[in-house]
Length: 118
Image (tube, rainbow, N blue to C red):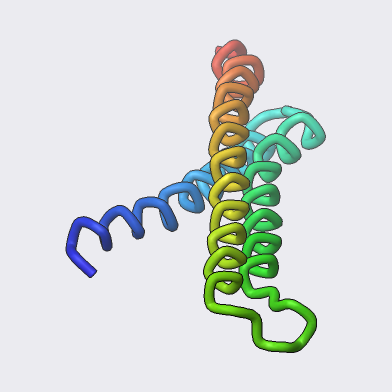
């Protein structure tokens, strides 16, 4: 594996999860420091991570699936694995879009409950 491919792999794997953790920590900070209602803060912050985790799980299960216990042909194995990877990446893309929307939402909540009280 080349250095560029390894860098892209690390970015694809770790950057979205770091963003999800950052959103969760931001939500916790906002609830502790202000009077922001938890129902408005926590669900949008954790939804992208849940979508990504469920998509990854479904993609891995789909990609690792075989046809009824017998060994399928090599082309079928490759096709099934490609479909599973595609599912996982599509769910990750949706999760990143949800994370962007959650970030905008959290900026609005931070402005409303933290910055507007000064």
